[in-house]
Each structure stands twice: as C-alpha cells, then as structure tokens.
Image (cartoon, rainbow, N blue to C red):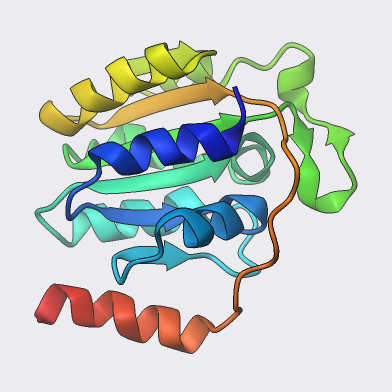
Amino acid sequence: MHRLEATRLLLKHVRDEALVANLGPTADELWHLGHRDRNFYTFGSMGLCSSIALGMALSTEGKVVSLDGDGSLLMNMGTIATIGRERPGNLIVVVWDNEEWCQTGHQKSHTAFYTDLERVARGCGIEKTATVDDLEGLEAVFMQALEEEGPWFIVAKIEEGEPLPVMPIEPEMTLYRFRKSFTG
C-alpha cells in the first residue's frame, strides 16, 4: 500500500482528533489530502513526531494520532519506551514503515533487516499493537484504535509513491492554528 492511499483512508475516519505528521512526504500528503487546523506538521523535527504527539496526549482528553515514520522512530526509540511507561489512553501511533530513511537519501532502515517495531513497542509495555500491510487491515485496526482505550502502536508497511509538491512551510501559523483549534 502507498502512504498517500493509507493517509486518505485514515482521514475518512478522523473527526476532531489531533493529527501530528512526521516531516517531509507524510506532512506534504496530509496537507494536500486534508489540511485542517488540528493537523500539526513537524517541520524539521526528524525523530520527534511521536514525542510531540505524546506530550499532546498527556495534556488533552481527546485522541491524538501520530503519523510517524520508521526512520524517525529509529532515531528516537526512547519515545516508544516513554509511551509504554506513561500509557496515555488517548494516543494512537501509526508508523509508516517504508524500510528506509527517505529524507536522507533512501538508505535502508533497520526495519529492512531485523528490527520489528511492533515487537519493540510490545517490549516497551505497549499492549495494543498491530502490523498491517494492506488498506483493509489498516482500516480495521485504526477504527478499533479510535474506539478503544490505548495507547495503540500500528506499524503500516508502505511503499513510496510519487511525491506531491512541498506544502507551504509556515511553522508559526501551524502552531497558531493548532492551538486556536482547542480554544475556539
């Protein structure tokens, strides 16, 4: 499955949940498919998407969805352990696993070899995990995660598609719109 199709599918089920998007193509695709005030784009923050989402989940009642990448998570695996320790019931981490560091030149990531991020998450105490490789499986587990207490850790095996144009890079406005969406 391609990340663009998978993101489109998830957006069909998102209501008012906060979405935190990893840098690069993940943010670009989310912006083009469904820009809204509750989307938080992590410009230049490789490795911090799920950490930012964790902080949000710990400070709000509503569901928070992290759209992270395997390469970014591998750069900051401590966030998985912290999620397992804190266990925020309102956090859903979706890992777009293309088995490469796309942003730094398409080098193979550890998941292309022996690292299994779902097993890492389970080893860190995250009980609700899944690995999916098709849209049907992704939709089923994502809908379950939206309805159930978490935290959830979903590894979605993806392929890269054709890149979309780079979204407007405006971190200050992203933060302003995002904060305002919680205060009305």
